[in-house]
Image (cartoon, rainbow, N blue to C red; front, side, top):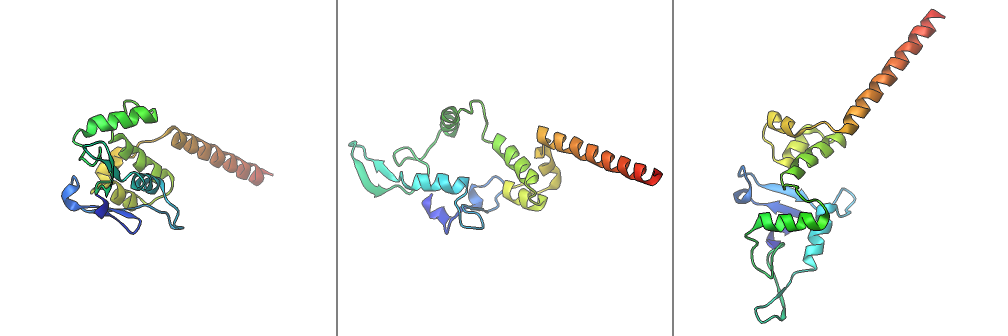
Length: 161
């Protein structure tokens, strides 16, 4: 609902969340630039006019951020499948993006406690289930070991001279 979009933040009410905790999702970064969520919400703001039953476009603003001509979306799975198809992401589940978000935050250096708050995980054990290792993580690890071994070899050579 638009009443939950305040001061460049989306407020998720506790009654709407899985674990009954309220959440705050910023729509901008530290510099005030819209992030991906902010861009999406602002795009929806421009689409607030609804089509009435007579087919006319109404100047009444719809109170829902996501809607079908002002009506609540009841079939989320169908809407999700349509959105994924349009984005070229067939077969993706909404929950898949929670895992991706967790991995991206850790890769970006976000502290685990902050990433857990954003993804809504209450325990580190549950969060770690989402903390999958990417190919990039593996390549970075191998590169780090190779560099470490090379430096160690150089130290041994320097000592032997």
